[in-house]
Image (tube, rainbow over all chains, first blue to last red; front, side, top):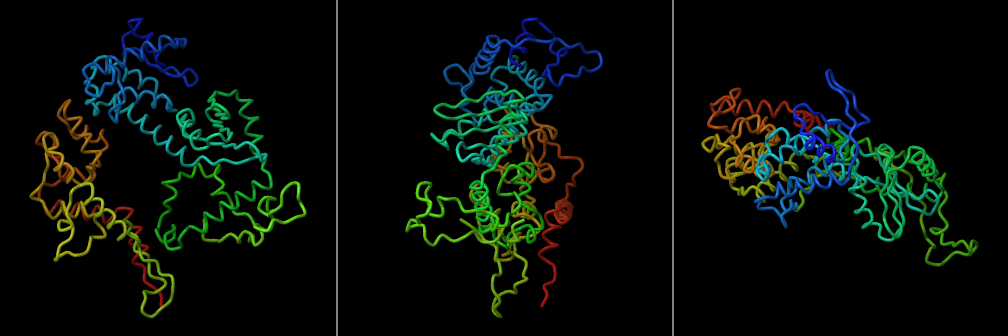
Length: 304
Length: 171
């Protein structure tokens, strides 16, 4: 996108006669012709460096002559977040905003009521909020009693921005995450890799992740029991008049979260070996510290 | 600090009935009053007084204070100090900061305030832009009070809470 903006500058194109759009969602309006513009990483870096220098010129928030993000609404950081958005108007909004930054320099820092700045700021805010929801509502499972796997469907491309958070949380535990809508996979072992996947590979990963072992079913029911037991009967949606979860935990995530899945009869579950005090080698013996483990209580009806 | 609405858990002649609705709206108002004192430099005497010792349930404390002090309004957004901006209902800490940043670039209009995500539904009664107030709002304080209270009473939040809290208890 930045290289496309650089090309419009190099070609001395009139800005009100150019509209940027992502190739996949391109549908020309009346009187428009499509021009395919190749990606050029060098040009994109040149545009970004020039933008940072132009915006940081005589700006009190600048760090080392560049837009350092020292202030909370950093003029250039907004572009990084807005670029992760799914919106079709995003390339043109960023195009107009970059042109405004080059025109106004450090004055754009105060010009936050301008509609061009507001457009990019709204996109960036949405992406930042979606990143926060990613950090809150990703749930891991162990399909094969080995690798931790998570399937998540955000409305913006948030996995590249949040992969570092999960790496810090999980530490050395290997895990992988899949975003089927954007075709992004995160794989973490000794090092972490965030990569775009082909549709066939996405489908393969998703199918493998759907397989669920008996141990995993038991542990998911354990989490559901905990979720039900910590809720208070006086503060649920029947007393409040509306369901707070709908606003703080959007329903579009519920299908991938075991907390919100239908409750299962504990009688159909088998307790994993390690919770029965048995090990793989010593299947007949019972360790003394494991005696007295209670079975899971029946699911309560006040949960949903 | 936590405020927790009373939840009836046992039957006893000296306790409220088991079917008493949980006063979640009062808890919400207490939290709002607490935040006003922490982040908006309100004092407890400004929010409640000997004549009005209870927080209003239909109207939040900041709006209630604004309605009972019409002499402090309207506030001009383009040159008011931050402490005055913070007293306007609908302008919070983020909104005040955005106004102060944006007005350094150019004087602000009501369209600019809307672009900055100020809650104009509440703030338009109490602010002026470049000396002009919003033409759809009355200038008389008693008319403002009527308009605000009618708006709050018919809001979905209050309608739902009234339906749940004021239902008759069964004996």
